[in-house]
Length: 108
Image 1 (cartoon, rainbow, N blue to C red):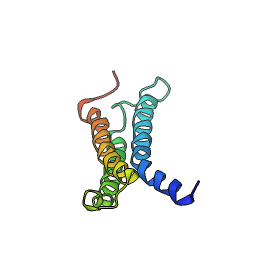
Image 2 (spheres, rainbow, N blue to C red):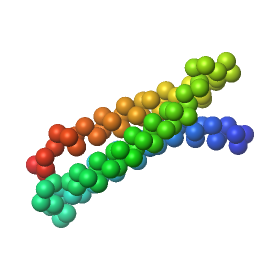
Image 3 (tube, rainbow, N blue to C red):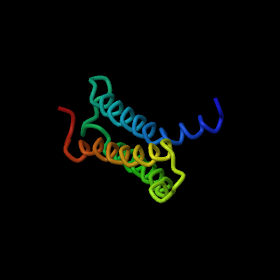
């Protein structure tokens, strides 16, 4: 395999990696802080989880911004289109994963 191909595949799937890491951190931290051994008085640390969400939204928005030229490029291939679509999809997914922060008051 060509090294450029692997680099382009990584660039195309990087937004999904951001989403996966955000999802695992968000729900793993919330579960750890709501477990009997690590129970916090006010529930999960909303500032920490909110900061992680804002950081992940920023990373996905930056990746989408970098792929914005794809619809106007006559030489855009499948990996270029995947890069743009997955960046927008990851941006929506990260935002959707952050919604429980607004709705959850504590550990129930």
